[in-house]
Image 1 (cartoon, rainbow, N blue to C red):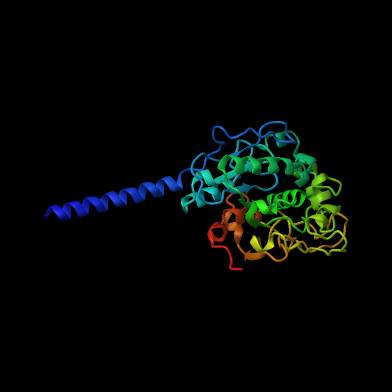
Image 2 (cartoon, rainbow, N blue to C red):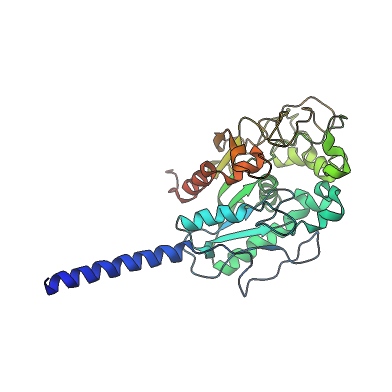
Length: 339
C-alpha cells in the first residue's frame, strides 16, 4: 500500500464527507418559527402576530414564499391537522434549497378561533382582501431580511387568489419572479349557492351563504372581486372560466385537479359530498376550470385524493402529491425563457 494511494484515498474520503456535509446543510429542516431579528407582523384580522416559518442564513436562490389555503395553516397546529405547506417547503430543502430561502406565512392564525364559531371560515377575516395587508408586510419583510430583490410564490387554493390580489392592488408583479398556483379559486367556488342542497350554508359547515364575505368574493365568476382580479371590468365574463391579463401569466404555473375537487366539481371528493353546480346567484355554473389562469403554463392532474390521508380529497391531496412537488421544483429552478 503506497503513500500516494493512502493520500488519494484520504482525499477521496474527505471530498465525500464534504459533499455529504454540504448536502445535509443544504437540506436542513424547515421549522415552525421565524428567525431572530425577523420583524413581528401583526395579523390585521386577528390582532396578534402572524405565524409561519423561515430561517437566517445565506440566500443564493430567489426566496420562496408559501401561502396555504382557506382554513389552513403553514404547518400542523393543535387545531389544524393539515398544514402541508411546511412539507412542500421541506421537499425543496431536500432538493437543494437552503432553509433561509424558504418562508411560510400563516395569514389566518392557528385556526383555533374556529372551534368557537365555524362560520369564521366564510367570514371577513378569511377573505382575500382582508389578508392582503398581511401578505404585503410579509413580502417586504422577507425581502429586507434576505436582501433579495424579488421572491417566488407557491400558493394553494385561497393563497392563489390572495397572491394575485396583492399583486393587483399594489401593481407588485415586478417583485414576483415565478408563481406556482395550485388549485386556486380564480373563477370562483361551488359551495356558495342558495340551493337547499348546498349544506355548506349551515353554520356547522362554515356558513357559506351567498351573503357571507368569502362568497361575496368567490361565489361566482361574476363577482365584482373576481371580475377585477381577472381583468373583466368591462366584460360580461362567463361562467366557470379562469381569466387573467398577461402581466403575470408567462411566469405562472397552474397545477389543477382535472377530475374532481370539492370546491369546484359537483361530484364526491373523498369524504366530501357533492353540492349542486350553481353560483351564489343561483345560476347554473360550471366551476370545473376555475383553477385555470389564462395564458399560464398548466399541469392537469388526476387521482390526487390518494395523497390526502385524512379526508381523501383531491383538493387537499394535490398539495401533498409527488407530481405537484416535482413540477413546482422544476418550474422554480428552470432557467429563464429565451427572449
